[in-house]
Image (tube, rainbow, N blue to C red):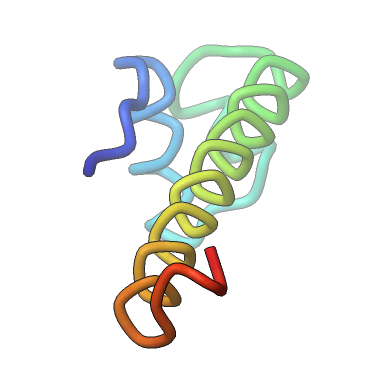
Length: 68
């Protein structure tokens, strides 16, 4: 099970992993702050969906079918 981020999302995620602010990420990637914020929101949404799937799988293995 993998999260599929687009190439631009991967670049943005990499910059945020360096601890940079929105404006710094936008400057480093030559993008507008709004574009970077939109891509960050998409990344968070994809991560949340991934976390929910993992949680359901763990619950299934720990508690069985009744909890899925």
